[in-house]
Length: 153
Image (cartoon, rainbow, N blue to C red; front, side, top):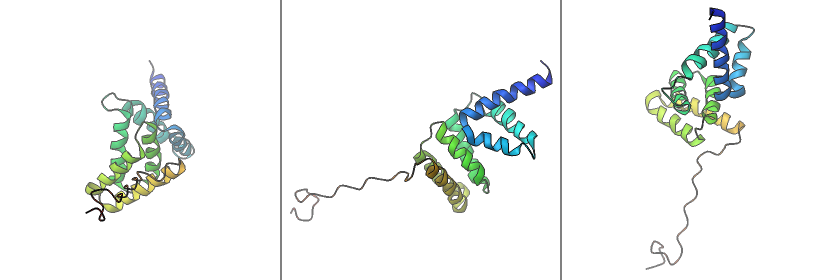
């Protein structure tokens, strides 16, 4: 196999993984690089997705949890969080699990970074019609005959 074939094979494999995980959002990132840094787009597809993301050691949902934590810790990565919150939903994480991961990150990354990540997630949830997230049902009110009711003594 020549280097050109190997490079193209890696790209094609990475493109399959990118489409499966990130869908249109990932493709938009690669397309946006085509007129300024197409090699970076190629490396995202071939290396990050073709070589690393598709390794067998972690399930895609676990990789997305790690990715969300890393992007939150870095800060200033809201555009990438947008892509990866979508990807996390695509690979089976629920909005509640994503919110819980971002809440957990506040302990290690700080409130400002957790807030920024949460607002990035909120934007994605709104676009996908997933708000409100984790709304708890209201507690039933005590009936007049229940033992916890103040009138039943």
